[in-house]
Image (cartoon, rainbow, N blue to C red; front, top):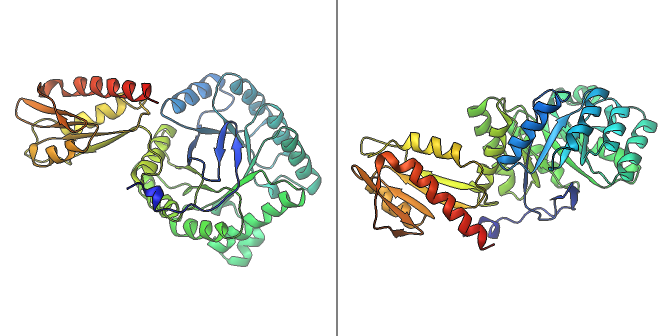
Length: 364
């Protein structure tokens, strides 16, 4: 059963980041952020290309200086994926990058300056038809809010968000989305649930500064998963101290695991034991790397022996069940007559998966 038949998504307004719809039951998008020096135009463009290659829908770029704003224009002219400009404090940088082609602006209006400066930024966003993301983080809450709540709490995040929202409301600007992130999963989840009851704008969800690859993936999966199962969330970003390519992969893995957005290969593989007839772990690792460009949804089962291999293969798009010396291939649950030698499994499976992907794409 499709989980979307069980989950009732929170009603939200629709905005667009470039050509990507956010909110109002649009597919939940996956975004990430470059970690190159923005002024290193060549490296930043290459990273954007690599991120698009693994499926990123939207990419955010930090713009700390006027030089970075100039670089952003050159980068934008050479890529074809929506780019969000991340701005703090300097309203002139925000205006410049809006005029340089940003598809969205990530700011906290309150730290941009006085009302005159905020109005100039909002007027420029209106003129360029560019939405804004209000990004509240537990690590950068306003001093008076921290003094009031004594520490970052869900209620503190909510109050900060509503304060920034008021700035936009006062200038009749409704094209925005909001995030209330914390490195503490419990605080973030509760803050999002509180915010979801207060506004109708789309929500960008994530667990900020979640840690390294393993710890951060676990925290993000639980936190984001809880929110998505509650119908909350219109776009996601996984924050890892890791190559941003891994953020994109984990994001799609979360959506795929919840059967919310099927994109790419769902590898079903056994944890291995002494019954395995070929190196399952090595096979999966190599195929995941080789096939990260395949976006066609399909289940591929790689099971090292016949105990569970047959059952998984019968319900997979493509499946391999381990036997001594050569293993059995299944396509759409049908056992194939010809076997695959165990030392050729990786190359043969890659070929079969790519051929199947082409056939499925030709039908769409």
